[in-house]
Image 1: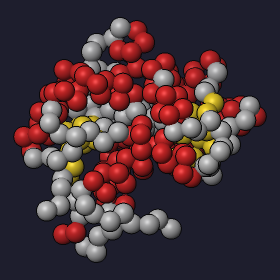
Image 2 (image 1 turned 180 degrees about the vertical axis):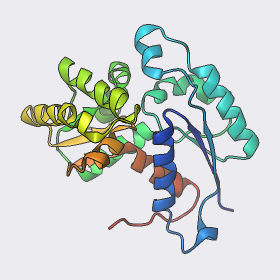
Image 3 (image 1 turned 180 degrees about the horizontal axis):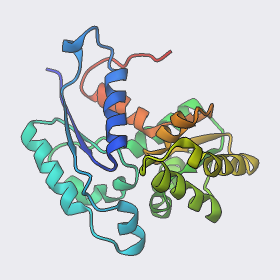
Length: 236
């Protein structure tokens, strides 16, 4: 029997929509009836994860746990979260459910090792994700060399994410900020990039950039499709 997916979303809404679109695109289906049943709880009121990690902001776990209960009641067989920073709270969420969480962090680190063997990966992420060292630890465990943004580049990335994509700003508003980061990190040795915030693949797409990169949202979508017992469609 094929399994179903529960998306604990809303962090943010556009990233949640992007994950659902990628699950659909990567499912090797011949028609509507061959697609996976997906339950989505997109609660945009979940408190900001970076603020909670760095500044003692409101704890997002109670709202995330509420969404988790809704997904359980719907009948989801697994849970995925289209938010890299939210994975910091995974150790607190996992004991609250019998449903397995599929980790975006683990899927992306594995993809970096497979697709860019021996290359130095530039981690593009929120200050919360970087401070929590989610990807530094995962890439080190996968024996993948990596580079993190400097202080100015971290500020520029937060501008791209929060004042750019999350705010619905036109790409022209954040093009220079994004390019300053990728060019600076390339100069310091990054050969490819890990788009370790779910808004960043949307930024790359909106800017029309040709960038050697791994999209964790894409890798999570593929992992979810495989978990549910469906074949993954090859992309041209």
